[in-house]
Amino acid sequence: MFEPTLALQTAIRAALVNAPDVAALVPADHVRSGSTRPDKTPAIIMSDGNTTLHGHDYSSQRTAWVYLDLHIWTLDAGQDAARGIAGTVAAALDKPLNFEGCECDHFRVTGSRFPRDPDPAYGHGVLSVEALIRWIV
Image (cartoon, helix red, strand yellow):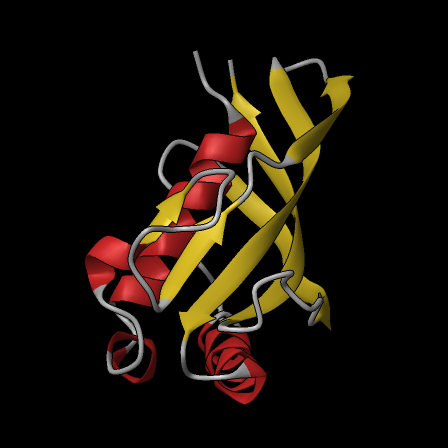
């Protein structure tokens, strides 16, 4: 069974851990999927995402739009550090991603925001991404 959100998370993680500029700021084992504030920072946490399926064509090809957020977290480094990491991540994702088991016809970072965490020691940034993914069943 193929799940497009997992394929996108895998491709993004591979791109980020293999980008020297990102690796200099965030250790590879701190780039993961999840839904809570991380125990170790700095970190990049990929949300579960949302998938909008678009059915299939005559050759059993499926298509879907996938949307997810990448949460950037810092501790005792300030909001500006989260902004800096977010910029580095966006630059690293501004190239084709490598997908296994599918094709990606469209990928881009669609926005960024920097909400304040209730604990002022944490810096928090969110990058939103979208992808159009095709695969054969």
